[in-house]
Image (cartoon, rainbow over all chains, first blue to last red; front, side, top):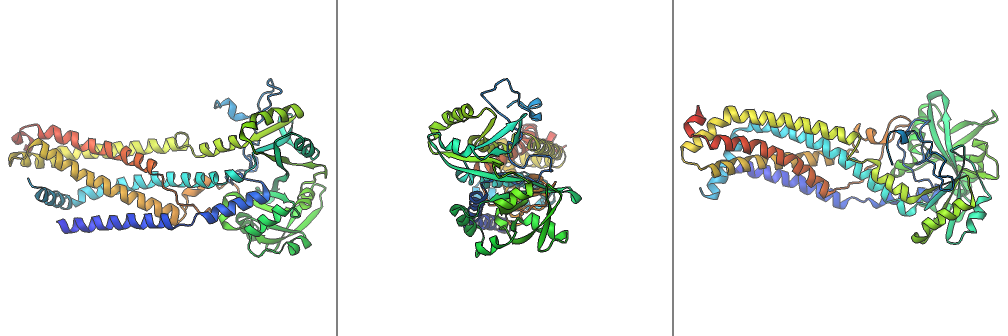
Length: 84
Length: 392
């Protein structure tokens, strides 16, 4: 029964090697370059988290902070649920 | 018992009880695949976003009125430039264009193409783009999601915007933004800055907001105070906040992830229960026979430990490899919509392979320890009883 076990071990080793090879050979710099170019062009960096039109597309669009007027309350519905 | 004899017996036992082990391996592989897929997607998206942080502006300044952001006066740019330490002050004109018939929206961004940096970035972004030709007419660059949405609504070459004054503006689709930038550009329409103003009906002396950089990190808090002293109706968004948001974007300690973990734990409990009951039926006799032929308790525990360790390792490798192929080769169909959302336009992002060995190690421990414990504890309980009693 050692033979089928050796085959199984070899198969798993092959799978692991294939994954590690793909991981080490993958060129991830291309995507980074394109993302950096679009940020350089538009100055917009927020990810598209396909939100409905009434939800903010840009991060922190509904968040207001103003140390000059500390009494001015933050109009953010999430504040009622979570503490920052 | 010699090591080779032990190994032979172990593998014989493993393959003889194939049907029993295949069930356990199958369930464990599915659980590990799901868990690893979720962690792979989240870490890949997080890594992609984090890699853009250096290019982002340090601060975004906008005017507020009644707690909401409104258009910012363009004269603020000069006032901001007067503060020592501030550089790269740029206005931004953007907004969402709501396409009423289908309830979808696009992010329209105005870019000053006469700015040298912008034209350089455009050349880097789209190969062989002719800026003169682009600016000669009303043209726009659209994201992949926008392009496929417009095509499905019979806007093959151009799209007609409805302006604020009720008139219409036809704009040609010049080129599609590269698919590799879909994480940011899927719902984006890039137009010249004047055209963006026209679409949103904005005055010439206003912009949506202003971005700026402060080279010296130590000066950041001081600069924020100076901006707040300069304008009272201002909102300043820092890059530090954005970084924190990216870190928490797919926080695997809360929300959906907690539910996923709970499901995993419950499933594990079911597996453990199954294993436990198995020991009390078939394995009980097997342990009794081994004890009767002279095996010590230590030998039995060693056999059970290695037998199940092999099952754990096989399931873990299979689960992780399947998850890797599913996420990084097939781009996680269906599952990626949970992370990217499908409310507005369908998005398909190429996920960059990211392997966090710490996370994988945690999954392994999280899975292996209860699994081994569930087998070894009952096996030990039987092994310590007399052989005759165990076989009954």
